[in-house]
Image: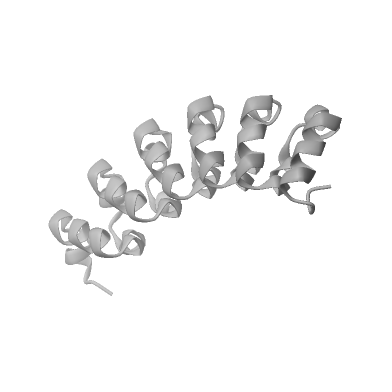
Length: 149
C-alpha cells in the first residue's frame, strides 16, 4: 500500500490506475473525485465506477465509459443515468444482465429489453411484467437461450 502522501499524488495515482484500475480504491478521496483519474480507472475496468466519488457517478461521460467496459457498472451509476436510454443501451449491449439495474421505464422498453436479450437471454427475468408476459418476446428469448423460459 502506498503512503498517505503518495495516495494523494495525482501523478502517482494516475500512473498506478493506468497500470491497474483497482489502484483507485487506494487513492485519496480527492483523487477519487478527479475526473481524469476516474476515467482512466473505468476505461481500464468499468466496475471501478463504484470506487469513484458519488459526483462522478452522475457524470454521463464517466458512466458511459464504465458501462461500455462493464455493463454491470450501471449498478453504481446515479439514478438519473440508470434512466438514460443511451447509457442503459450501452450497458445492456455489453452485459444483458445489466438490465437489472435500469430504471423501471427502460425495463419496460421493448428495444432496450431486446438489446439485453441479444447479449444474454436470461435478461428476460429483469424485464417489466408486461414484457415478461409477452409471448413473442419470451419466444425470442427461448430461441436465444433455452434457459430463459
